[in-house]
Length: 335
Image (cartoon, rainbow, N blue to C red; front, side, top):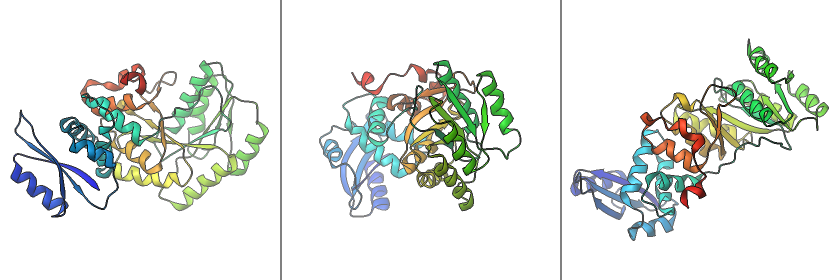
């Protein structure tokens, strides 16, 4: 089944909208009238789409709190989340008994996405940061290296982006401050040899990649060669605030390269997060960190369902990004 909620000034208008969008086969799951505005909210279902049948049962029993789910829907719509993903998340809001839209949204995110921050101590494989041009890969490599250096780890940093003017110099200016020798690998074979020669020396290795066009087959082929030669774990770096449909297309492409996690940048400079949700969903990637400031030493924060829900539900003018590092874990917030 496919679930969708319709809002209209009255019952007749709401029913007309349901029939127009879902057809005569639509099944009315619930109807509610807002006591303050008088608006009618109708949730209808259409056969042929897979959803959580238990969630429908909860809605029929009044357990889904239609105004809570509508608050989540409106917030996700503001952020430009694709319609099908909104429907899945709204249905999932029934997974936890809470009258708080943030916690209902957190439950939906927890049921839909996985969350796994990058390690800051050690890892068996190097991490290569990949993504479209301008996403912030180079500065993110510097931030990840700085975080681990401040924890006393031995960190290696490699760049494979030696073609763009100034990129090597930019990254080198950061690594020098951290007393890290920046290594430059010009091509897949050079990267393979470099990683073999340095195996076992570092606790963590971070690799910057060129900003290649994900819609160009040749570019994606070259990026695939880099990943295969290095035997690395690819991390998708994507800036928040882009077009959600295009981000989803990119996510699907990068999924073919085996990305495991998505690291979102520029959350301090955008109001809408639909693109990063769409990309993570299409790539089937776990959320890891988010970049909330341009400062190298303190610009990364691990994300979890509650902190992401706060960003989605909170009024964007409340500057919720500033308090991300104060967000509790999902289990703590529910206890």
